[in-house]
Image 1 (cartoon, rainbow, N blue to C red):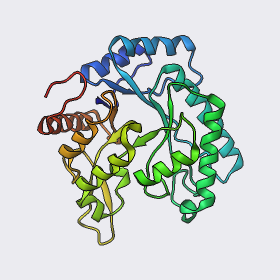
Image 2 (image 1 turned 180 degrees about the horizontal axis):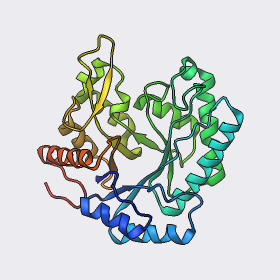
Image 3 (image 1 turned 180 degrees about the vertical axis):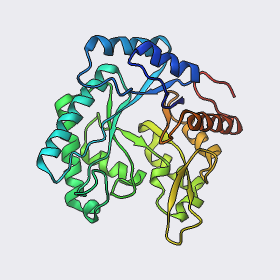
Image 4 (image 1 turned 90 degrees about the vertical axis):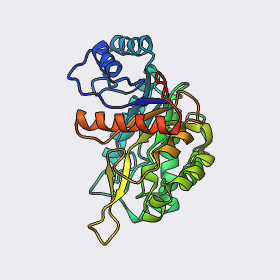
Length: 286
């Protein structure tokens, strides 16, 4: 498994960006914001060569647009953007592109809606995914979707139902363990829960997001909070052992932190957990 995270460097120079990753000891990368579908092919090639030279895997290219928007113009723009991002990711040799399946919330692009568990929404998500894949026809990059608790794609079981319905070889799995936890019962039994999730998903996972989760003790209603790894209830020793059974180049990406210091803290924590688990990331030793 490969560890990666955001790096804090103000540059659009591929070599400088990759050197920042090397400095942190990361062997997997997010696609930087200055690489997009309008980027010159020569710059994309330079970036890919820099990654290859340092043996760093480009884990994912984000889309983060609502292809199922109730606004037809927004939906079309999101679809076109998704196609271009998938094509760029394929050119770069990224493991995957990642997006949400979509949302029918008319106020927030990724917000909740009661219809997100309906057959109509499921069918619309399947059709959109198929269309994006069929336009690009990627050979290397997987089209993947984020697990989030406010729609049907909220667990490994639902992910497999969705992937089977899409029925495209280029449809892949992006797994976020903490996003699949939606209540205290799952949080406090996450060791057993993740074991079952990984049995279902098998070796089909293209990328993984890592963060921690805790229940806010000051709220009567359920309020699950993302926290820096090591400050929540996720059993990372057991989780890393499960991830270690996946293909060796599976990227594990830290996310949703605000500062370089927070990423450094999370990186130190995950490396300490890996030693306790008796497993190691690519380029590191137990």
